[in-house]
Image (cartoon, rainbow, N blue to C red):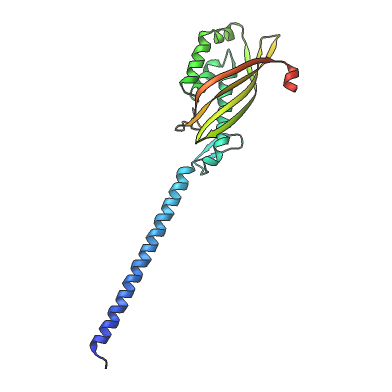
Length: 207
């Protein structure tokens, strides 16, 4: 026997189904939106700069920094060693200022020691030209900490005489805020040390 209450029960059931369906849909939609926002934010945080094939920085293009760390580290070390050791009477002051942006107090202490030993005075007095020929760096990672060993070949031109030297240096790398154009890679050299310096001749270089 049908009564007016039968229709009311059907309507209530239908309304409850619709409400539950709306709640479930809203929950799924919100969860998906939150996940998309979180995922996009993570990719944006980890990707901020593009790296050219030569290690130079191109701002505002999203790439994964971690995947390109080695490229940046090698470019950073190359830049530092060229600034610090590629010197002559006309450029040594500006080059050294640029080099000091790329390292911490260990680099500054080495610079002060060289200055006290008269290295830069001799550079001026005898018009020496120190030119970097090659830079080869090896980067090692241990528990998220990075260290390096760099072998630099450079020559010192004394007018009619040119001597070639091999310098092996080492240190560690840490992340810092990028500073354009002073420190574009956002890395800092710490615990920098000149391990060995030896004079080499052309025959050794060919080997």
